[in-house]
Amino acid sequence: MNTVMITGCSSGFGLETARHFLDRGWSVAATMRKPDESLLPASERLHVLSLDVTDHDSIAHAIEAAGPIDALVNNAGIGWLSTFEGTSEETVRRIFETNTFGSFEMIRAVLPQMRAKSDGVIVNVSSSVTLEALALLPVYTASKAAVNAYTECLALELAPLGIRTRLVLPGQAPATRFGSNAMALMGQADDTPEDYKPFVAQVMSAFGDTAAQEPTKPADVVQAIWRAVTDPSCPLRLPAGADAVALAA
Ligand SMILES: NC(=O)c1ccc[n+]([C@@H]2O[C@H](COP(=O)([O-])OP(=O)(O)OC[C@H]3O[C@@H](n4cnc5c(N)ncnc54)[C@H](OP(=O)(O)O)[C@@H]3O)[C@@H](O)[C@H]2O)c1
Image 1: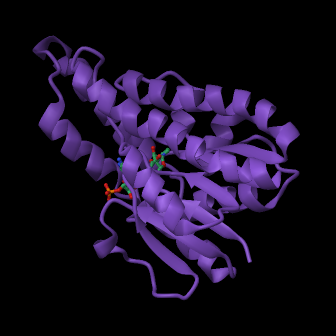
Image 2: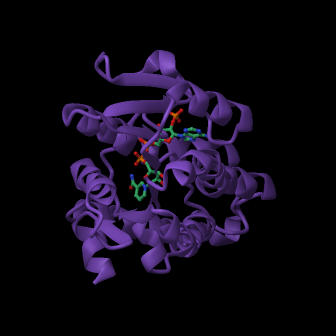
């Protein structure tokens, strides 16, 4: 039986991906910051583990508790929609700690066991915003573009060791908690100077119009992650959702 470890399973893509793998007979190490609040159905094949991707010790404990891992899905992430000047150094670091360095540390922790058996799959969830330049997204896009860049290099290093590496690029998916979590963080930390406010209002209104078009569905992302893990012939980059597929084309 195969085991997948997924980060950020409390909601959104991570929760739905965990359900999908469970339904197909996999063992799932579903990790989240608050395991007591898991929404996953009880199963003998489900192992709900506490894991914060910014906390080295919690990563080590979860990897040890999970046992052998065949596939790692780095899904945990936070959003941020603000001007460059309105984003403090502390917030920039927080976003990179979660979206970029979190996946570094997860991969560092699973590679020894995957290398030992010359087998394994690593899937990094990035974003379609890396495919086009958008205002108010310099920091979030940078954190995900770094993921794209290192994943592509890593794929070259790991392929000779029998380890596959893939990127999933979801489009805009309003159905998850991503937007509300980002808004909460922005409410605490956005410090955009007044001069930007008319432009920010204009951009936010344009984002609203785009969101009303065909959004990415969590199921699109789940399918892309499933394919990335189970289909060795799939390409390195998998856009997920109609908007992401159109952008990639
Ligand atoms: N929704 C979109 O429009 C969209 C588009 C492109 C890419 N993405 C990417 O897709 C991934 C999943 O997002 P989603 O839409 O499913 O959003 P979501 O519903 O907000 O889920 C994000 C998950 O990441 C977890 N997380 C955040 N910080 C963490 C940390 N330090 N350690 C461990 N887990 C942490 C959250 O846990 P808590 O419940 O503890 O906060 C939550 O489980 C993210 O990487 C995001 O950047 C989303």
